[in-house]
Image (cartoon, rainbow, N blue to C red; front, side, top):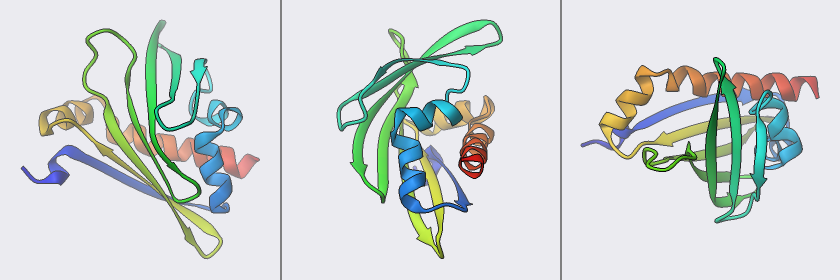
Length: 146
């Protein structure tokens, strides 16, 4: 099986310095304004091995999520596992975020790596590609308004 059979990759160039974009991913006061605008943070520890636990309302039901930070290399790269915060949840998605400087702007690339091609296909079916693009859109709107 080819690696790309288990991946989703999306990118966007943001009109902001790389340090600011990196901070928007790793500092609670930023993340809560573009990622979890209607959610609640229950735990925040953005260090390797640390967790961010939060809940989000979706159509009247609250869903719990957990991010486990794997690697934090400011301002170049961030790696984390993302998934449901529930007993028996599917294996988390390993997410690699790269921050590349491009003429004073920042190219952000999200690489989501699923446990299997079937897990990727299921995620695509439920809107993972659109969701990743919407996340970068929300980040861009937040940074432009800041």
